[in-house]
Structure formats: C-alpha cells, structure tokens
Image (cartoon, rainbow, N blue to C red):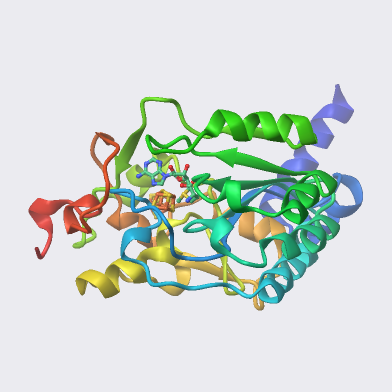
Length: 293
Ligand SMILES: C[S@@+](CC[C@H](N)C(=O)[O-])C[C@H]1O[C@@H](n2cnc3c(N)ncnc32)[C@H](O)[C@@H]1O
Ligand code: SF4
Ligand code: SF4
C-alpha cells in the first residue's frame, strides 16, 4: 500500500515538474516509446470532385502537387520526435491525382513500420491506377478507404478487387451521405474552450511544410482567405514548427488544449446538409449572418 502511494506521488511529481525532454526520455526508455495518435497530410491540394462544404476547402483551392521527397523528409522529422504514429492518412484534395503516389509507399512504410497507413479517396481514378499501384498497396500494407459519394463509381467492384489482392479496404461514409457545415465565424467571437471541447476534428492532426497542426482547418484556411478575401488569422500558437519543437510530450500537451484558431469555429449545434456539388459560395464554410458577403 505504501509503495503504491509512493509510486502515485512520483508519477504526479513527474507529470507536473519534469521538463519535457525528461518526460520524453522516460516514455522512450520505460514507457514503450513516444506516440502520436494520428496524422494526415495532402499529396495534392486540388480535387477532381467538387463537394459543397468540403472541410479542406478544396473547391476553392488551386492545383498543387507536393514533392514526394518533401513529404518523406517531413516524416523523417516526425520520426525523430514520435517513435510511433497510430494512423497515417494520405489525403488531398484527391490523393490519386498525384502521378507519383506509388513512390511514397515504400519510404513511408520504412519510417513507420507499425502504423496503420490509409489512403482516403473519392475513388474516381481507381480504374485508371496501374498494376504497380495495386501491388504496392499490398506489398507495403497500405489500406484504401473509399468515401462513397453519390456519383457514378462502382465502389463495390473496387472493394472486391482489394479483397482479391489482399489489400485492406473499407468505406469511409454511410450511404446517406451528409456533409457537416463548418459555420466559421470570421469575427472570431466563439469561446475557444467550448469549440475545442465539442470538436470532432481535434484529433485529425495535420502535417504540412514541416509544421504540425492540431486539425485540418488551420493549414488549409489560407485557401478560403484568398478566394473570398477573408482574414482568418493563423498565429504562431496555432501550429508546431518541427524544426523548433522536438518534444513529443510537449506537442501532445499542446494538442490537448484549444489553440487561438478555435475562436473561429462553430460554437452552436452541428449542422449537416445533403451532399451537393459546390457552388463555391461563402456560406458553405462561413456563418453567413456574420460574414462580409
Ligand atoms: C477532404 S476528403 C479528402 C479525400 C478524398 N478526396 C475523399 O473525399 O475521400 C477526406 C474525407 O473528409 C470528408 N469530408 C470533407 N468535408 C466534409 C464535411 N464537410 N463533412 C463531413 N465529411 C467531410 C470527405 O467526405 C472524405 O471522406
Ligand atoms: S471531400 Fe470532395 S471536394 Fe473535398 S477533397 Fe474529397 S472529393 Fe474532393
Ligand atoms: S481550430 Fe480548434 S475547434 Fe476548430 S477544428 Fe481545429 S481543433 Fe477544432
């Protein structure tokens, strides 16, 4: 009993007083390693579909292809901080638009051998993917998650193909497809503790240009700003610069609290709309009563 009490006291002491590098050391050598639950990133910013309310703002995003070597280099930086990552999501825009997507699988799998690596796709290009792509999915254990949009794609056929080739595959959404409106407040009047606590995106950490963000909204907001001439601000507290912050425990601790950007998010009830093609209207993303429309 006495030992348990002393151990509890020691754990509490470590949690409160230990500097981050010491906590990382303890995790590495006594706690199974440093860990990030999930990270996602864009292979391209643009898309071949145009979904209203896309929460990556893709309908108003210009074409951009990331270099595979830059993504690999960012994952090498992450590896120096996090020994393991639970889930890695390869996204866009539409990731299959990247002509070199297959070249990413081997290096990414080498860096994170135990992670669940998943491509999320609208499936439109799956029939055009070459044999190398399919073989590499199987070889490097990359899963295919298809978002089942109400469009002309035979998703069931693709599932069967994956089964045959030994590739993990599944559907990301249910058949009655609905999109959540972000209802952002450009005046930033929301209570950030409130928006953060009810946020379903706060575990969707996002890697872009050697920076790690708590969620996908922040790194992609410049596209919305540019298209609609808005001024959602990103502050230095809204992201982690991987060239400066090297502590896993510190990063996880930052991601457990609201960031400045949370003041722009929707405080009210979540609102869902039926799937539609985007008209690139501000109201798809911004609370219209308080917007500058
Ligand atoms: C941004 S997309 C990128 C990958 C690919 N283009 C796709 O759609 O599958 C990733 C996932 O986010 C979902 N998503 C995007 N905006 C959403 C919204 N407003 N509400 C609900 N899900 C959304 C998409 O349906 C998709 O499953
Ligand atoms: S949600 Fe739609 S518009 Fe957005 S990236 Fe996916 S397919 Fe493209
Ligand atoms: S800024 Fe905060 S509240 Fe908004 S999506 Fe990101 S984590 Fe959630």
